[in-house]
Length: 265
Image (cartoon, rainbow, N blue to C red):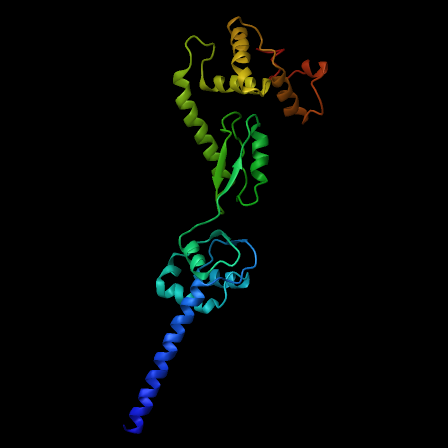
């Protein structure tokens, strides 16, 4: 065999060997555990592209060999599907699972629970404390028209969006319930129904007692009486003077507020 042919053959064998070794190592790298020592949440900010996301993961110790990771992502096409957001990486997560998670947009889902009985201002303060939500809370939230329940959101969602969802959920519930109301009630509008329901809710935290409390108020309205509800007095006092430091006093009951149902119908 001529010397040149021997050299070419040796080179081809070497290249085949290197190629096989590279493939074996790439598969090992892709499937094996990564270096992350403990579960970690990482946020990839809006505007971060594929390259920046991979480099950031390497800086945070989620993956080794970011260049190899980029090559695999480019070869599989997954890199084009990388999305900004917040991701929860488990300890020792493999590059394959990292790739699947980000390319699939498997972002962290947060939740916020709005308890019953909160005023619009208290709901506004609760939304303001959520660190992942963005933007300010819109002004002019209508009292009683924010449905209290649990809402889920992800990084990038805004406080305004949550408020809008609360309003939409309340409107949907009212649209379902209003046509089912009993006949001959002294309530003319949806707004009046919401006001009365809010007063009943504040009168007692025990759900089983609410029908009885509501019946008392309905009877007073039918007879042209004032509601004489302490929570309405408290609402008016707090709206003007700030949070009460204790129980209502006799002076509070005489406080001239449009919400004082001892004084006004």
